[in-house]
Amino acid sequence: MTESKASLSPPADSLVRRLTRMNLQLLSVTMLLTFALLATATWYVARGRQVHAAQLSARLLANSVSPMIVFADRPAAQIELEAFSRRSDLLLVQVQTLAGAVFAQWQAGDGTPPTRIVPPVAAAQLADATSVTMQELEVWAPIRLKDEVVGVLVLRESLAGLRMAVLTLSAAAAALIAMAILVAWRGLLLVQRRALAPLVELSNLAEHIARERDYGKRATVYRRDEVGRLTERFNDMLKRIEVWQADLHQQLEQEQEAGQQFQQLAHRDSLTGLPNRLFFQGELQRYLAFSTENDELMALMFIDLDNFKTVNDKHGHDAGDAVLCEVSRRMASVVRSRDVLCRLGGDEFALILPALPDQAAAEHLAQRLIDAVRVTLTINGVVMPIGATVGLAFAPVDATDATALLNASDQAMYEAKRAGKNTYRRVHSAGA
Image (cartoon, rainbow, N blue to C red):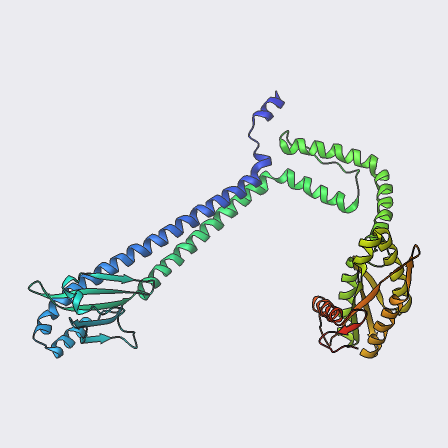
């Protein structure tokens, strides 16, 4: 009977956190969307009302100044415009003749002239027109006297006051929405804490076991809901782990040894035994940082073998592999013990030269390396036409970061290639 009642009860204990988060998110999105729609609608409605009011004002003012245009009474027109200019948002009011000339004008501050002057040829067909932006609105109204168009009235108003009012109202609404969301969050949080107490206890026990490795602990089952069943399965797992712990510890030790061996293999080129590109990238960063910190000169050689593709194509990949191994051995024999020689891939190598006394030392070593590779190399009784071309770059002289230094040495290597191979060049240098 108890089992039946438990199975019929709603799974609130295990879903409260998810439902709380989802409800809060849905509430927030709905309120924010409603706020955005109301703010947008408020702006467009308020702006429409101001446009309508400006159009009515322009028509009334056009009727007032029409006799003044007919009788060319500019002072009276100017007085009429100045009296009309008491409106706070008004930027410009201007009366134009049919010829496009300004008959009378009032302008606030250093405003710009109207964006349109109606040409005489279009005056007869002139109708009310309005231009509205986010900053201001402009209304053009024909000035008629007895149904005859005698001029044009241009009225420009600022929307700054309206925009500020809408922003103020929106800010107040946003603050109220934020407070409502905060109250909802606090209320849901209180409910969540009460409903999730068994799950929190189980989580704390799991953290304690993970930290202390005490697999003899057991969790308490409070209810036969999803959390209760989870607790039972958790206790079963602890029992199994307690039995398997010794074997697992032994396996971890074995895997740790295997991982260390794999780490060494991951940084070594399987063919030549030299450090690979992955190891080179890390070492270059480290040596560059040390060189910068201690203000020491260091160099990077980018080495490319000459005619290696010919060897592969003509004598096969086995011969090419043998050439790579022998060339690696020769280059390793002439570098200093502190230097780092790496194979980047294919027939490309890199040599890091830390703590150099001067640039000449690196250039001398580059020549020694080229000479060592050029010594006659025979594979299976066949002489291999192998040489080496070297690009040389210095830090911090040529570059101060790894990518720039590698690019500089690579550029110098291509300069050496163009110079005839079997030589070296330093970046932007005439070479040796």
